Length: 454
Ligand code: PLP
Image 1 (cartoon, rainbow, N blue to C red):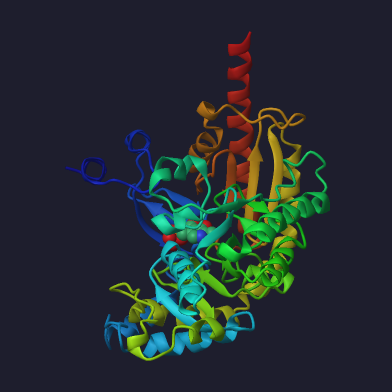
Image 2: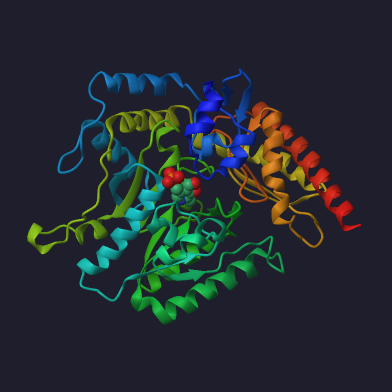
């Protein structure tokens, strides 16, 4: 049996309708720089950073070497009741990078777990402090925080989450400021309306709310919705005012993705708990973290018999290979000025992406740093979407694949999240491929629908 046949016979892939995979299988064999290569030798731009992870490109020598060097010492030992060298060194570096009051690092293996941990910490924080009434969470409509039941409960993307409704814990949802879809298209009006909606819920229910979860500055999987200026800081103010812990999810946005180390720095926001992952190892190994303030940490610190311990941990927590590569990744962030590079090149990217607005079926282009979404619509004037069955986002991504570029859409929003080291020339080449695929696929689909109507 060849590899393709084996993959079809034995694998079940994440977020994948396997019927689609059977029609369009793809197996990656290697990578170099910002490109990956399949088993037939065809090369593709990794235009979504292998699901929003990659920083320095593939097979970065320094990262490869860091893992090899660690392997010569030890691959893994537990963090339950003890620590290891790289996990300890990394924690200090991470705390130095974090917004002010975040002084503690709790390790896990994925973004979903990092959020799940933050939610549990927020809940238990109040329990440990004797505020038994504070048990609920408020989260943002259309938000995404990963796929474990806790993360899904504070998430809100119907397509992914509705089926699990009965399994999820109930909470409050606040509206998201989607400027493109707001009738005024005025960022301030849209922002203020949502903040008002949040304040109304908090005013009435703050005594029973433990925490608020929110993605930082950009709702990623929900369609690359860039929050209007002043929104995240407005949420911070309300959380403080109503004594609700602010849990900021930087899993997608952290580690330079938006042109600052963490996206909440754009507005000087200091969360109480913060989840991060993805780019932390440069896209190499599964390490994630939950940052907490000293105040939260202190609420768990007591004699064992008081039962305030945080009873949570994963077998691979603080894995040495992952932490070693994360340390080298952070060193490269500094020596290669990665964050500054994203910030500079994203200005050029903005100009180039703005040109896509000229296409007949591009409704909106949204961007913060190297986190970009291109929303495809059937009718630009009315912002009417393509019918769900058209799957234009998906079809556009298949066309891009044919043209030598990989990305995955969220619905009809084309996601462009290239590795952070992508050069101006590479960015231009990637946008050119996306432009060609988008115009061809949307025209074909719009023509087909028009014919169908006649
Ligand atoms: N939070 C956000 C904002 C994300 O975008 C994601 C993944 O895309 C997650 C959490 C989940 O991370 P992971 O896939 O590592 O569990």
